[in-house]
Image 1 (spheres, protein in one colour):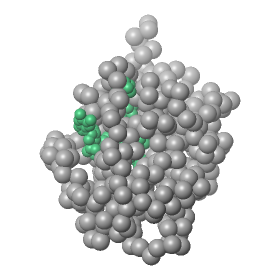
Image 2 (cartoon, helix red, strand yellow):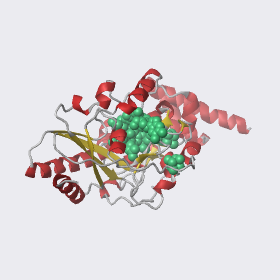
Image 3 (spheres, protein in one colour):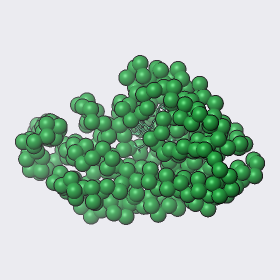
Length: 344
Ligand code: B12
Ligand code: SF4
Ligand code: SF4
């Protein structure tokens, strides 16, 4: 690695960025066919850039791009406290603490300032919302390898890492890919509640609970029951993965869910005003789709709890002004009725 690479690695460590690697700006041609397949087979989500050329060619975003600094930060904090209320819905670790977009972007901005102290350069940086395929860049830069659960797994930190990247016109040396060490256990495929991991390395995102908790589209009835009490995101295929055992834990206080403890109070969520929601939960990644999507998910969670004594919480929403809320309240009520009928 040349001196500039060393400098960037050193500064990124000082800033608390756990992983820093480098790759070139050639197009990600090897995934083009897969992206087309996804587009043609209803496997593309509304959260992705639609122009497939932008997804694979860094130079369409930064024409002078020569090298890409790819960064990873672990959010695998040690935390096991539970809230004291009963009616709780679950947040995935990716929505613990402060929104990772904010946390990692801030660190990247500071890193850019440090680089600018020694060399002027052109750049564009992204965390999650950029046009390119983040995971492919990370694999190309040797941050980690693909697991059969689709996650990029780093040798030291496992897969609970967020990714970000800086497109630059700098002359940098590049890292090699690392060997794929995903085992033959298939634990992720077996554990996925909806069968979204249809085959190794191949996810059907439209079946993934993470997608279902975020989409504004209708959630197919047969999948609602599989969402359990998950309000935002899903960690199942990572929690079962042996590559996340005995890894370095995250030291980033920002990802400790001091306020939510990793859950939300379902009763509160059903009644909270938009303003209160923004004030109390606006800092977390899971709030980006707005209050009503989480409220819908809270109704699904109540329906999945299958307890008749929760009906009094659900019934008022059968008359809600929002048709989506009415529809899911009805489903929750029916789900509870069906269960109590089958018990009789
Ligand atoms: C859309 C999106 C989603 C969608 C669709 C996910 C998907 N797999 O495509 C949904 C909402 C379901 C989702 C869920 C999650 N996401 Co998301 N998501 C994205 C986003 C915005 C685009 C993903 C994308 O481009 N997919 C396109 C396809 C082509 O990629 P892919 O399905 O991963 O397929 C790759 C592999 O399967 C592999 N592959 C295909 N065939 C084969 C065959 C072999 C042999 C091999 C080895 C590999 C291989 O190549 C493909 C191309 O890279 C990215 C950010 C970004 N801009 O890139 C974040 C991103 C992928 N998500 C992220 C996270 C954290 C999550 C969740 C863990 C959140 C949660 N807890 O709920 C889950 C994980 C679900 C899962 N098992 O993948 C991180 C992943 C970090 C990591 N360590 O991998 C990213 C990178 C955001 C970030 N910058 O940190 N996400
Ligand atoms: S995040 Fe959950 S639903 Fe999505 S693939 Fe993993 S286990 Fe399946
Ligand atoms: S659970 Fe097993 S098969 Fe799935 S990603 Fe982890 S090591 Fe690979």
